[in-house]
Image (tube, helix red, strand yellow):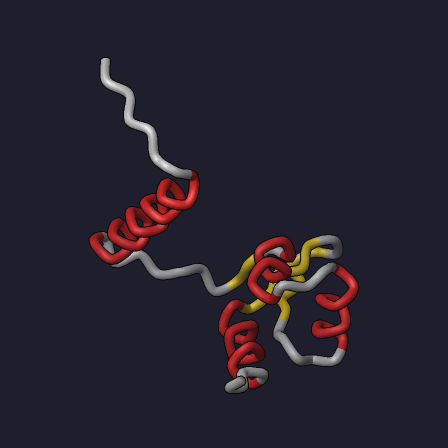
Length: 87
């Protein structure tokens, strides 16, 4: 058996490229709604800021049940685009 060692960054880059390749190969679309954890990761915020964005209507939500809140991925991207600036 052969063992191949690669750096952590290279490993995650390879995983990302593999994921994108498979997604394109099978014409897989991204989900329209994401969980709070994914929304916070995309925005780089914590729970309090996410709630503020939700409460002010900056990003769209869906609440299919009392304890479940989903975030519209397109509205998150639009929010990020609105706050883009050149440095």
